[in-house]
Image (cartoon, rainbow, N blue to C red; front, side, top):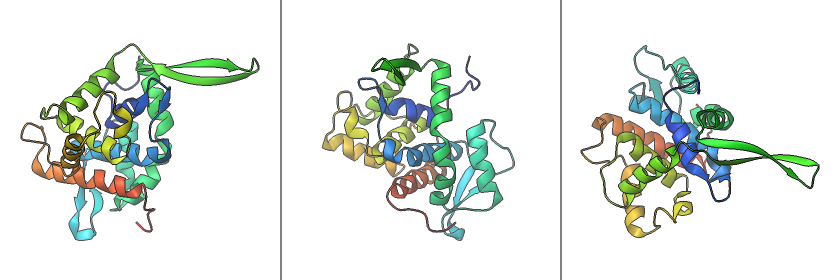
Length: 226
């Protein structure tokens, strides 16, 4: 049984980015920005961080209730030390996320890791989709939001925005057509326009959108200061 009962947004994002046909994860080059953005978006959706416009749009913690999940707690603690720019936080927390998030997915059975021998001598580890069906459920929800116009939950909207912002959405073309309508809807999600049905207050949407867009920008612009 997995140690964490409720999957984080970063876990769901990593699971979606896994490509069953190739056994690879889409967007590896900028993956830590996407996963870091998912962690910060998770904190924003739970009302545990905010963007302080008075301090140059730096992140700050909200309240004193700390996250239970280790990955969220680590990011929260770092921000709690002092307000920091999103790019600074991403650079600090992002590189450490891939392996623990991947292990959680394996522990849950969402992904399966097997050893394969190559050239008789060498052993490599390969990933395949597990039998839980969770990736299919997540993909169906993102597709419904982007293609069918279904109003998403806040988590689904954030996932769609992160996938689009990471530049990996074209790799989902078999399930999610890569066309102008989908691109336009993804842009709306990145701006925090999720529709009235998304269970998140307007301020939370604004903060989440700011974090997602900062994560996107950080993929090409390195942080200079905190």
